Structure formats: structure tokens, C-alpha cells
Length: 549
Image (cartoon, rainbow, N blue to C red; front, side, top):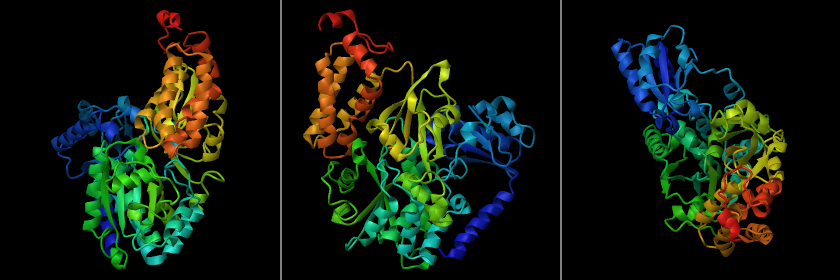
């Protein structure tokens, strides 16, 4: 494909839209599909045909619109009306009201903070474009960043813009993206690789899945730009097999891009060639760690190895390898299009740009959000999230998945960035955010996440394999009322050992939920151990158990 042909595809798509009076966008991401949005889409199509409106009205599937708790969601493209909790039987009323005042009983308030307080960069196309049509992505400035990089910039200039942007890896560690790209570019090797880490395994997290389901070409474009910058010609997307819809749309997107010459040989008539393949993971949480992921891509058991050497120097098949996660690559196209300084103007001094979060748990507005770095937890939970349901009191928010910590009420006005979260005893992680209210027992919460880490440990190193099991057993004793003060001391000692001696990030961060709950909710641990009671009424501490202590 030539640059002229790319622009022609965009023009043709935009012109065809002008012929349509009304476009109904139905969310067909996994969340809404689980509530039968596919049946809603089918019903709308039948109603359009029934009313003889096929020439002037269109129904299309789009990606995640964000407010998952209100799905299925349907938007009317030109008017901006958004319908919530739509059922197939609502299709007739929606179609009959096209060009008229919207159906009030279904209307969702798009002026509410959930929508108005967000800033979308990664999610700018989510809920807008049809993820299964490359033409829609191209019409939304898709592949323009790749065109600009290949025809107007050399690899060093691309890396310079990424460095200027201040983008840090969105997979959790927050390593400067420009520095990583520069390291891979300088590394010596006969071949180099690019890997997109889409092995999203945190309980309650669905950020990467939603991006892949809603805007797969954006990730492919970011990977291709990365390949050009570091000198790689082959890319892999490592995605868990439990994401069948994301996998399907990724594979379809790759075929479409190859058909138009946007992936493959001599892209845009240049000397740069780049291919992408999908690799499926079996669901091992440890494969989110980059060296374990590399082993899995190579067909080996997914276990981490000591570092150095780092993957940037010796990664996939001992070759220099660039690894970033889905959200990191999704940020690349707008950075190249708008310039690194534009991106650096958003967020905080050390946390540039925006961050996508999966807001879940005991909060009214559960869903997918994107906010500037530096926004406070209070704004996220009480403004965008709509507060705690049923008049309950906020107790804590757990960030960073099983490796993160539980942050209490006293930190609600803390800005959300890498350094602030670390200071509070948690991490940014990939973006999971689970809200808890007064009905949550923090001992039980710590036990839940420790059981997850124990189960997901690959077993390669003793501190993680044995330590997480011992910690889980101690937490079980505390929750069932059979623990002593000595058990609590041993629990804290084990946290220190596992954190400082484990081989990889899974073991190093596994104690975080325990340490943070002990730090901020020690009184609940004391109540379980000394008073033989669970303040939240969650743990089943019985008289028979107390008698055996």
C-alpha cells in the first residue's frame, strides 16, 4: 500500500458515512456480549430492515464503551444519545425514535462524571470504531503514525519522541519506555524481536482484553513502530487463551493489515518489513513476567530466569527483544502523530500521560476508565466511580492486582502515580483497581490474594514456592481463629524473606497485600488473634475452633 492508497481508504470510508443518516453502535466487547448485546444487535438490524431503513440506517458492533455495569450499551452516533441496559425487545422503540427525542427510559446520562472526568488516549477509538473493519481504524487516523515513522523519521528520531513523551511501561514496573527502546536498538544481534505482553492475569483486571477487543489495529501499529525503531522484523503477541474474542479479533486484524500491505514485506514501499504472530498462553500468571513469557513463546515451561542478562540484550532465542504490554504499545501511535511533548504535557512530573484502570468491586460505576496520571483516588472512586453502593462506608482500594496493596481511606486524596502508590505500600500494576467497603474483612482479602499467588507460583525458587504456602497457612489460622501472636510474628518474618529472596516479581511482590493490610488494618488481625472474632463478620470463627486453641 502506498501513502496515497492509505489516504484514499480513509476518504472512502468517511464519504460512505455521509450517506448514512443514523448509525447505531452496539457494544460487542466481552462484557456486553455476556449480557446478550449480540441479540440486541440482531434485533436492531431486524427492526431497521422491517422499517425499510437499510439504505439510511446502519447497525455496527463496536468495542467497550466503559460503563460495563450498565450494559448492554447502544449509542446513536450523530446525536450522542447513549442507551443503557438495552434488551432485544427495546429495539423497536429505539429504531422508531431515530430522528426524534430519544427513548427516555433507556437513556444514560453522558454528562455524569464517569464520562466527563475521563481523558481518553488509549481508549479514544473504543466504543467508536468497528474493531472488525480495518477501514474504520484507518478513517480514525489509523496507521498514520507508522506512515510518518517510516517515511519522515529515522529509528533514532522515533525513539527520541518516545523518550520525550516520558511514557513509562504500563505493565506495572513503570520502566521508561524510551530507555528500553534505546537499549534494544543499541544491542547487537543478527535478529531482534518485539513482543506484546497481553498475558493479563490479575483478578478483576480487564484493561488489556478490552483494548484488544475494541481497537486491535492500534496495538499492531504500535508494535510495528517499535519494530522499526529497534531494528526488528518479527513480532509476537502473547495473549491468554481465555480471551477468545480478543484472540479472534487480533488474528482477523493481522490478516486485514497483511492484505492491505500494512504488515509484511516492504511496508509503504520502504525497506522495512514486519510480521506479527499470535501466541496463546495457557493462563499461568507467572508468564506475565517477561523472562517466563519468553520461555513460553519458545515452547518451554513458563518459568522465570535470573536477570541480567535482560531481554533487551538476550531475550527470545537469545536475541535482543523489546517487550512492552498492550497499553504501552497502544500509546505509541498518538505519541508519534502528536509528538512526545504533547504526551509529556499530560499527567505529573514523573508520571506522564494517562492510565487505563479496570474499576471493580464495591463501587457503583464498575467499568473501564482512562484518567490523567495524578488524579486522586477520591476522584476515581467517588466522582467517576459514583461512590460506594447501598450507603456503605469505604474501607480500602486494592491496586496492582495480587502483587499490589490495600490502600485505606486516609490516602483517598493521594495522586495516583507510580511513586505515590509505592510510598503507600502498593503498586500501579497493569491497572486493576478493586474497591472494598466495610463488609470486607482485610484478613480474608489478604488470604484470597495469597492463595492466588501460592497457586500461581511456578515453583522454581524455594522462597516463593514454600514461603507463599506457609504464609497462606498462617492466614488461614488467623481467619479461623486458631492463630497465636507468635503466628503473626512469623507471618511478618516470612513476608520479609519472600520479598527479598524470590527469583522473580511474582514472589517479590506476593507479600504486598499482607504487608499493606497489616500496616493499615492491624486491629483486624488483632481481633482475629486475641478476641477470636471477625469485625466484618466474614470469617467463620466458631466456639469449637476457639476451644481447640
